[in-house]
Image (cartoon, rainbow, N blue to C red; front, top):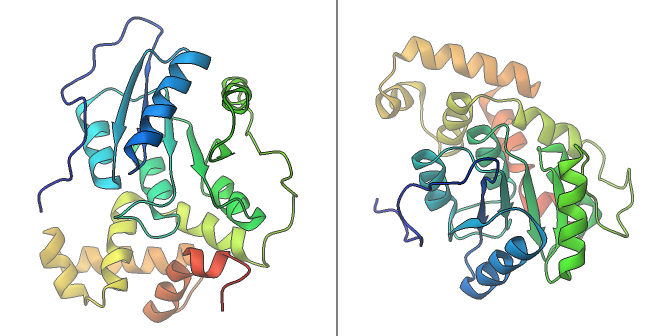
Length: 233
């Protein structure tokens, strides 16, 4: 599959102690606004943008780790918190700030449990972004005004935490399990031994606290927005 386009191609050369930032959002105007905001309120003079999870992963592969990632939860190739969890695994030491128009307490809580360093409601003024970045630079997690602790649905945070504990390979295998593939097919797709797949499946079920592949799929689906939003059926 051909990667979706992203701008400012090529490796980044950054000044000492400056770093760079990555903005992941599929709305070009909002990307431009966030780029200007980061250059205005923070130290990030080099800002890259990507319009999908896939293109963001390519940017991260081709460059040194960024100082900050700004991520929208609604991307064309992302379902639920998968984008955040995937990028967190790839750029483990980089703080990721979620910027989203979905500001329900349960979504904010799930994002933070999944590893987000902060959550900023979309269309917030620059001062909020400045405050959020200041919190993160002090090693704190930024939570927006109005957020209520402990308001998540029962078990949601534990589910997200369990999914976040999977390794990259385990996460990929779980994804293929969700697609209905058997161990033999997964082994072929990933070019690994079937016994290795079986070992990973066992580890996945142990981490997720389930007894079957079907239960593992249900846990994965529980991280989707449809189960996070209180209005979901």
